[in-house]
Length: 353
Image (cartoon, rainbow, N blue to C red; front, side, top):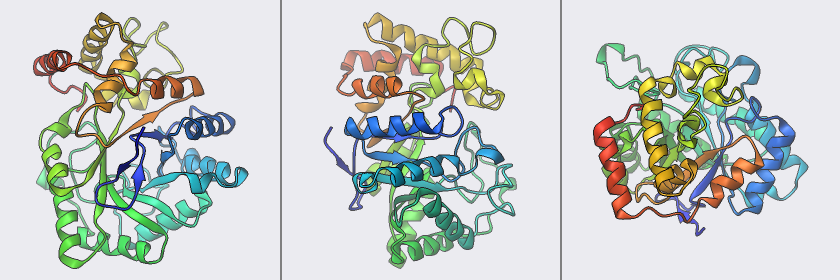
């Protein structure tokens, strides 16, 4: 894998990124450290985490993922210098009062969250510091309609950029990014940065997979024209696109009980638990098998080969899963197969938007 430039920043990253939100919930610390070792061994040195992880978010596991990664750095001198480390400041509370007091995300909150992440990660600098979701009200995480009546923003984008600029100036952050953001938000962050000489966002991290392709309806043009890298998360749709739920469904005695959707009711209540999402996934998985591919290979190849995607964030619970996902690199889809995928999308649209 050749490294790619992250947007217009100086960071160069692998086109596969190791997502870590399972660390501290589904994955214990020894297994997490084994996954981190293997990832580095396989050449994937781009690691993504967040202050609110592990997922599903609970007070008891807040910050656990960063702590596990920080312990790995401490136990393995030299590994921090070999990795590109990304983490995120949580946006407004979303029902998680343990993250911070109040429902907003002030400039002071951004600084305090960064300091907390640095301590847990046992590092002096974060390579890519991202806003996990917008401070302003936007449809995200399965919501699809913008409602002006729900607007509760208290901290302007300019103020957020000023806070991030202070962290960059202090040497605590190298580059900044966004997550779960809209075309409007990306444009505003870039416009204000250029207008006021503030740090420019290098990337935006949004959901993207066969059953959730909303990024191709506006955000794709935005990132292309503004030179912002797109990071695709949940390429396997929380396991729907691995085929593990095809026969059993997501609930019941035959469902894989340790898998995320089956295990957590909170996940089933989200976009991944919609019947339409499973039905669509079954169709794509069937197409994969017709092509003598595993559903996992097929779904990852879709992301790995899209011009839109700079790096695909893979989340795993074992070294074996990590190897399977990395081994899928290099799998290609012919134009005819891409056409079949687009036909299915036209029929079913984006059920896990």
